[in-house]
Structures are given as structure tokens and as C-alpha cells.
Image 1: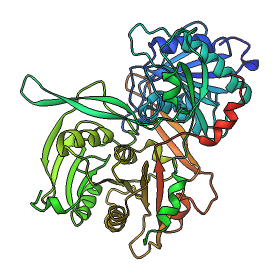
Image 2 (image 1 turned 135 degrees about the vertical axis):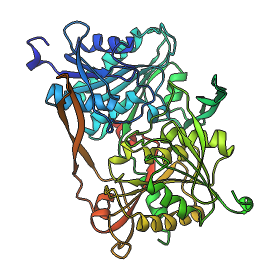
Image 3 (image 1 turned 90 degrees about the horizontal axis):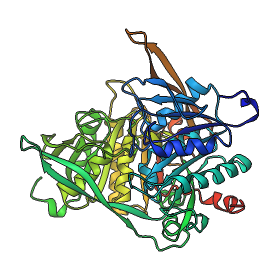
Image 4 (image 1 turned 90 degrees about the vertical axis):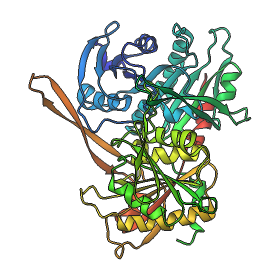
Amino acid sequence: MSKTTANRPIILVTNDDGITAPGLRALVEEMQTLGEVVVVAPDSPQSGMGHAITINKPLRLDKVSYHGESLGYQCSGTPVDCVKIAIDKILHRKPDILVSGINHGSNSSINVIYSGTMSAAMEGAIESIPSIGFSLNNYELNADFVPAQKFAGIIAVNVLKHGLPQGTLLNVNIPKLSEKEIKGIKICRQAIAKWEEEFDERKDPYNRSYYWLTGKFKNYDHGEDTDEWALANGYVSICPVQFDFTAHHAIPFLNNWEL
Amino acid sequence: MSKTTANRPIILVTNDDGITAPGLRALVEEMQTLGEVVVVAPDSPQSGMGHAITINKPLRLDKVSYHGESLGYQCSGTPVDCVKIAIDKILHRKPDILVSGINHGSNSSINVIYSGTMSAAMEGAIESIPSIGFSLNNYELNADFVPAQKFAGIIAVNVLKHGLPQGTLLNVNIPKLSEKEIKGIKICRQAIAKWEEEFDERKDPYNRSYYWLTGKFKNYDHGEDTDEWALANGYVSICPVQFDFTAHHAIPFLNNWEL
């Protein structure tokens, strides 16, 4: 890190696609314009890890050379492990902001639940760190992260300036469009959508079955205030997310039961 | 399954402690009094797996002999994988109810986020199945699951009778007390609490560092309507949980930003 650390925000950057992912590099480059960047990312891809933590085996943590002046570490654990170990063993303090991504694929609507990218951001929020997960809705190998990178900068600047309400993080998704084609940014709610699973059954060379998880995404929500609507209509979506999972509206219903 | 299937509810039972866990057996025994039980559980312990899914490798699914008349399967994946594959490849329909557990340890307050037990139940709710996760706040090797088992029966009967509001599941925690000592059941909200991590750093025989995740649980919530309060005061806690993670209250705050 440069000697200006005292005056610039400390930015913790992580992801779930792993330390070598191009989306991580794009995010780091953008964050280097805003503050002192520390990268702590999984040493291998961790997509779909949800909020998993590693408790049955120990973790490894190795310093790696990373882009520019930034400190870089790879960790053998999950995205959530990366956040926890970064605070306890590398920073020895909380960063001023945590950014996760840029994920190579969507984390809109129900995907927030399965996403390692978003779980890292949620772990940051639990630690009272203003935290944002960024995802680009583009699954192509040579996806262009530049438009997503620019919006990540704009949104991070706002979070550094305004902070976030306690217990809240941001889920940001960027559509697969050029910068010119993107119409703007919409604040959204999580669309009601789900995956319809279909396991692809195959036989191994010993004639035993094995199963690949596949699925079709189904959006059941016709609201124009959802993240899916924003993305389908050319906007970047920002969905505020909370880790109080209580279904408060269901409490009166349950209080009527004879228990 | 017996020939009475048509008249009795189909109950899908899973967990995160794995197919051999005593808490699973206790839950299966209780559910067998209420309906036709199908067990699909991980072939190895999956604690702390959160809402992880397996996308980078295929799954194995093997029939195993299980307690009594119930159909039993072990799956190489996570608790969420177990739910998905049970519906698509074993039941070929949705069960009438899904129960997960009985977890060997607490899933109250913030633990809901890290819990494989609760993620399995959440996956059930996403599939519109009335779903419940049960956890016993007892980490002893020879923990007595009998009181938890009885409360699981009472609560499952109520869910079969009343259903649950769309998008809602139940997080049930049972205190480490005898049946007589338990004062009753409380409907609760998720307490504001978190883990303060401390990684235990050790050296391997080659003098390289490795890290065990450890932590202390901190409850910051003094409310008497929380799950932590209920458990500390001798009650079984039921917290309704939702998978709409939108922080709706934060939307006006974000709409004031200049984006």
C-alpha cells in the first residue's frame, strides 16, 4: 500500500469466481482510483457457495502479487471465509467499504440466496461494513467488464459518501449492454422468481448414475419495481438487501395457532 | 412406503449433519407417526454450508436402508442439493411438507444465515412447500433429542393443518432442557446477534501457517420478542423466515442519491 493510507479509505475487495477472475481485476482497478485496496479472494472458483463457511478443515492464506500496488491474498476457503479472515488476520481492523465481484453472471432476484458474491457482501454488512456485491449479467468467456466497472465506481463513491443504513447491503446487477446502451440506475426490490431444476442424469464408465444440476430461470413477477424488470429494460439494478430474515408479517398468523 | 400413501401426507426429511446423524433419526421417527416419510440427506456432514449448491461437479445419489419403512437416499451434495434432487429424481412431485434437522446445535438468530439445515428448509419454501428447520441447542455428543422430537411433532401437525403463508418457512430452535423444564413455545423475531471471529493460527510440520475458524457468539439484542430471549428463558422459539431479502425500508434512502 502507498503511504497515503491514513487519508484514503481502505477498500476490501473479494469475489466468488476466485483470485484470477477478470471481474475481480476490473473491480480492483476501479477501486484503486478511490482508495487503498486489499484483495482477499478464494484460491479457486466458489460460485454457488451461498453463505458457506469452513468449519471442518483449516484454511490456508497466501500472499500473492496482485495488480498494481494493492495487497493481494488468496484463501483456500469460501467467500465468507475470505471476509472473516481478512478482518482478523490481514487488516486487523474493519475496512471502510467492502466490494465483492464483479461476478461473472447474474445475482438478481432469487440468485442472491445461492451467491457467494452476495454472501461475502452480506458478511461485510453483518460486521457493520458498508458492503456491495456487483454482478454482470453476461456468461460469455470474454465478457466486457468495462461498463460494469464504471457503474461500480459510481455506486461505491455514493456508498463512501452516504454510508448505508445499519443491517443493509447492496446487490448491484449490470445488464449485458454497452455503456451507451445502459439507460441508468434503478433502486429495486428482489423479483419473485426461481429456478426450475432438472437434473441431467448420465452413466459413468462403470454404469453408475451421476447427476448434473441444471435449471431454467422463471420470473413470476410482473412488477416494474423489480431488479428483473430493470435489467430487462436496460437499467443497472440496485436492490438493498438485509440479513434480518424474519418474516415479520407472518407473526400474527402464527400467534393464532394453538401451540 | 406402505400402501396408504394416497391418504397420508408425503413428508420429505433432510438435514445437514448427514444421513447417519441421530437428530435425523429422531425426526424421521416422529414424522413416521404423521405420514409417509422419504429421507434424502447428505452422505457426509454439511454443517455451515449455508445455501450452497453443487455446480462444478456432478452428484451421486444412492438408496440406503433407513429406519422402519421409510425410503432413504444419501446424496453427495449439500442440503440444498438434496432438496432439489429429491423433488426432481425421487418424489417426482412436491412433498406435502419438508422438515430439516434435527440439527445438532443452534440455528437461532444470525446462525440462520450459515445453516445448511435452514437452507434446505428455505429451498423447500422457494418450491412453495411448507417447510420447517429444527435445531437443538445442545452440542454434546450424546445430546438427548427426545424433547426436540416431541416439539417437532407438535409444530409439524400445526403446519400440516394450517399451512404457511407463501414465501415463509419456520426456524424452530429447542433449548437444552428436559421436556418438563420447557415452558412452552414462543413466536419470535430473529435476534440481532453475530459471531466475533478469531482465527486460531497453527503451524504444519513444514512450518507453514494454517487457520481454524473459531468465534464467540455475541447477542446485541435486549428485546424480549427474540429467539435468543425465548431460548434463554426456557421456551422453544419459532421464527418465521422469508427469502425476500429486500430491505424495503432502505429504498427511500437510496432514491435520494444522485445516481
